Amino acid sequence: MKPAVLFPEGYTQVLPEHVPSYLANLDAAVNQRHELALFFKGCLMPAAPFLLFRLKREGFSRCRIAVLPDGIALDAQR
Image (cartoon, rainbow, N blue to C red; front, side):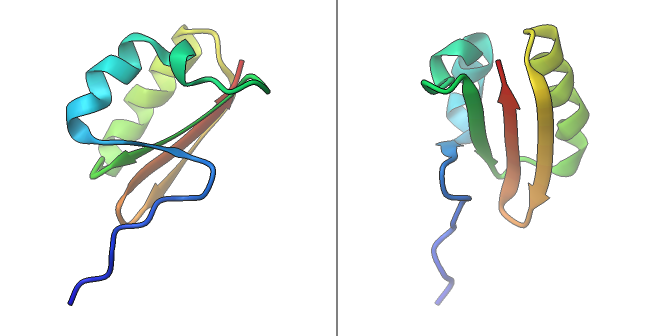
């Protein structure tokens, strides 16, 4: 039996079908401390530069990406 897919604690899991809505309005995912923490389930490493570009274009700083076995963890600050 395969274990359940886990994502990092404190991150909002973004399923593939929800990626467009999150990328269209990143501010909606920012918490009260002006931090963004998203986990893109099933996203592969080649997408990382495109996600970073989008964050920087939207005015985020301290942008980081971690490639994990089940997807990409992204965090940034507004």
